[in-house]
Length: 244
Picture 1 (cartoon, rainbow, N blue to C red):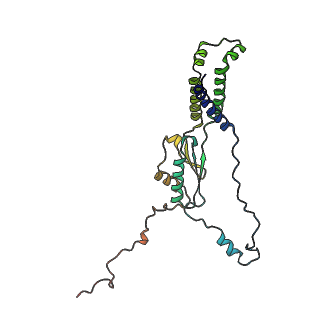
Picture 2 (picture 1 turned 90 degrees about the horizontal axis):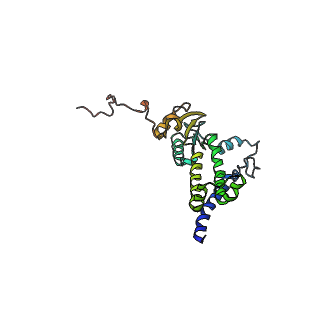
């Protein structure tokens, strides 16, 4: 086997090993939360200070808007490249309803698909091991290597590359849920799994706005009230020109 064949055979093996390491690697540690109970500095307001109430009121940010107290959960399929759509919807909701809390979260596939996706790398390893050492594996089980084994072994590079490619495709399919679910305060308001489509920005804006307590018109779409319109009744003598 020359160097070119070694390189072509080692590349799929290297990529496959990297996929296995990534799959079974532990999750990265969570980001440290800021310490809100740190010691007060020299300029901190003492509890007995009369200006403590005024200082605390100025220090605390006032978040007020149509969406205050409302939480929207956007659960989407991360492996389906839906994150861009979720970020667009998040920015639209935060702009339309100031004060709203939008949470982005991955929507995992059902448990059987997740379990099968974990088994795909093991099947890939077993298939490659059988391809490389089938002459010793089959006799241990009292079996004669079948004819298809020799035909596959005659083209090891093509067979191993096919095993790696089809395994990754199957794993990506099993890890995808195709979901884009929208929850408002824990209630489902839109489901891509049921509708088989994405919601439009105007549709999602109306769905969320109808479920916000004491909802107002979204920012930018508010119409002037009838009391703000001043109608000229034609009886203002000060503005009328003198009639000769």
